[in-house]
Amino acid sequence: MLTSRPALRIITALLALAVIITAWIMVIDTGQGVEQRQLQRDGVPVTLLLPNDASHAPGVVVAHGFAGSAQLMRSWGLALADAGFVVALPDLSGHGRNRAPLDWWNDPEQFQRDVQSALALLGEQPEVDARRLSLLGHSLGAGAVIDAAMDTVQPIQAVVAVSPGQSEVTPSSPPNLLLMAGAWEGPFLEAAQNLLEKAGGPGGDPTTGTARALEVVPGVEHIGVLFSPQAHAASIQWLAQVSEISPQPATRVSPMLWWLLNLVGIIVLWRALAPLWVDDDRLRLDTAQAQAHGRTRRPLVRAAISGALATLLLIGIGEIIYLDGIGGILVSPQFALWLALAGGIWLALGTRPPRPEWPDLAWGPIMLGVLVLGFGVMGAALWLAWWPPLHRLPYLPILTLLILPWAIAFATALQGRAGWRGLGVGLGVALITMVTVGVAAALVDGMMFLLIILPLLPVMLALPLLVSRPVQRPWADGFALAAFLGWTLTVMFPLI
Figure (cartoon, rainbow, N blue to C red):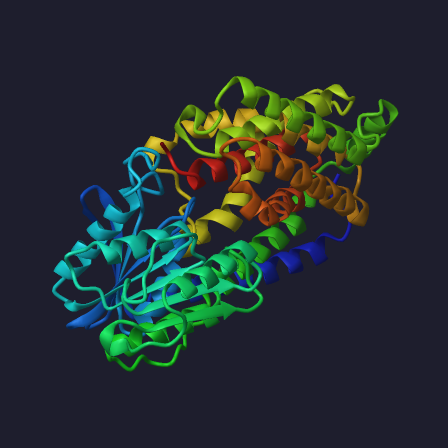
């Protein structure tokens, strides 16, 4: 049966399509004025961003942090390229396209060498003045650029360390050090303040390489600082001063705005059109059956019990098996195993889906396609390393299967809960998951980094929730959610 008011839905869909097209037009325009090259040095893939007609321009290596990528730093790189710098964006070992496994336990200088390889490549470009090279790094990359600057044969003019950890610095090395941290990332801000004190305090002379400063970026945390216009402007001002250039005022709108508009447009388009092909009678029947059999009863209580027990079980497993890096990838297997345990317990508590039907085989991939279109396709062009390299693909089905029980339980618990009621239950489950996973991350080896990105979890769950609500097929909804999270875990965390 077709849903009511189809004309209004079609009008809404057309407006959403107009927003999507506009966003893509602006994204295509985003790359104007900057040439992009894909190169490699010593096994390190490097993306070069060059201002059009660049000649003897200063260069900057921009290094990402743990679970990051060259693509994640692209927004910052574009801001620097617009200001007149040639920018090198490397994928560090174990990350992104880099096929070298991460081995920082046995080789603590691995990231330092990766940065130095990118620096050597940058200095060889004919458009670059090899006497005016600088380094910028975020989080783990901040330590890498500090270490690289203190142990390189190439002269370095300045270093920008964003959200740094602990490093060895002196009042004269590395040269012209700008420390930066978001106001909402307490431990990293404290580390930046300690480094400033070790480096001799604020002040110094840029001409002698002793300039030191700390920039506190308001209103951002560990990930948000990467896309802050204030952070970009502060780094440009610092590097332009030592490179003796006059950068052009920033005119480029943040590409994240177009990504967000595209995402909203895709979701609205889907929510407008999907109900036209959903059988309302089937929804009412499934909802009645779910309630009659108690499949959707007390979802928050069941989610809390399953999450707490999964955390205890994972802690116990961690005492028997060393989980850090199990399967050759960091963090992802532990998180997926937690979801498998929580999902199994949640289903055992009575949150059981109806029998799968043939249409589920179609609806699941369709909803995954909507998520990929909204979140990943434009994201891959702007800031996400979204398309898994071939050497990462084997992890995708394994992680998806581990996540599937929890995803199906979550989708079943939401069956028949429409509107604000469904949204409230979904957010409640997300918050419960944040807390219980957070406890596991604090206590299980190799999961600590999840504490930094846990605030993103409600967003990652909200998107599949918005896509699945018109359909309400637990098996299809669960597959789309599991594959979406599995895909993210496959491309995000480093290989060892």
